[in-house]
Image (cartoon, rainbow, N blue to C red; front, side, top):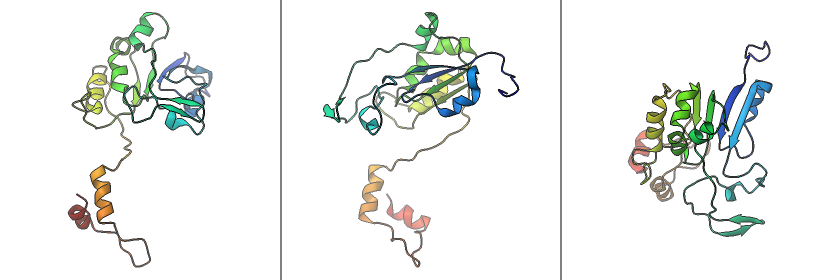
Length: 198
């Protein structure tokens, strides 16, 4: 499309959670990609080797306050604006594509972009999410996101699961470890796992 100049107008990308810069694959769009990036952490903040101290979550974490390597730790106050508000103020154009990676705040970003999504006739929203139930998301962030974007004729297309072991599983593995690797070792059968993992 780019090589043959089939895209005659800008492809507008809204990147919420852009710390570190846009993804390199956006370069395939050349000068047709118009990227509007937003992050709680400025792009210029030091991030080499210190990403664990610069998390982007809007919710509380276990990070202690203080300093580490010259970087201040702990909570800080940041200004938050809705995409609806930014669009109404003329600060962003209609979007073709929205990418969200804001450490659990994705449903709130979508909630603050309902008018913007309606006006944009969006092609795709790529978002991180999870299936965790919490006091904030009683039906999981995944369900909230699916319901909101379906109002804009968007459906789940693909899932890339990053699995994290539950504490009960880790404790069970400590109590009954699997046999070590070796030429005569065999992987435990599913029946063994079902009987001993829980």
